Length: 292
Image 1 (cartoon, rainbow, N blue to C red):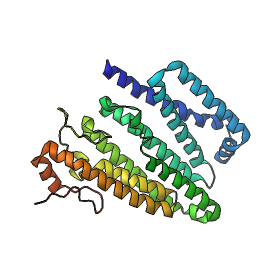
Image 2 (cartoon, rainbow, N blue to C red; image 1 turned 120 degrees about the horizontal axis):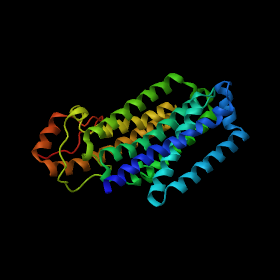
Image 3 (cartoon, rainbow, N blue to C red; image 1 turned 90 degrees about the horizontal axis):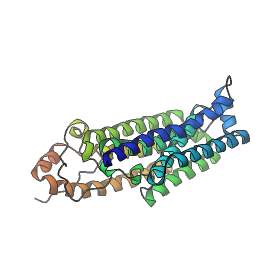
Image 4 (spheres, rainbow, N blue to C red; image 1 turned 45 degrees about the horizontal axis):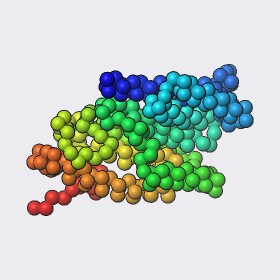
């Protein structure tokens, strides 16, 4: 019964995401036969804003009719992420100087959506609203807001800085590679993966050393590390690139040390041998140091 409920949550997540993504059809239908720059103009104009507001209200009303309680909370979050992804697509393909911010919107919304969806697939027992990672931490929220402020201020004061397409392309590649590595790690770990560091070993918990785990001990953290920095390279945010680099490095250093204490407790010599053979994958982070 619980398994069916969790499978249902995954299906609701997919349906609601694409329902929100349907926002791309609003300006496209109004712009049949026109160029993409007109689509963006419609999207940002008063008529476009009214049409999109009506679409959002209609979709939310549909979700309220279809789902109740926890299921609605899943649906509305997935729908919001789909809506953000759709807006990012419209901005990305419009002839506008905000193109790279559109890439960023797509990257951010897909990251949070896919965190929930993959968790629903590999470890439904640990699935919760927190699996979206939308309320990850106060620091995470402040970091995101800071990047938006920096992008906007620098775009107004130094617009040429935000038009370094080759820099943004490097950032996009970092984001795509980081996203693929993290999701590969989650899929490889399967039910052993959890967003929360486990202090007690479950009966089904095994040490995963195959696939991407044969190249680095913490591939999900490596992927997230480069994904987060890549988002700021994509936005050409020099201040946030440095800030994200330092903050992410410090966070994952502490997180890895905390997790490896548990892993040594769970698997003993098996993990110590694995630790000696395979690096963490993150620069200047060796993991927990064992006193001889």
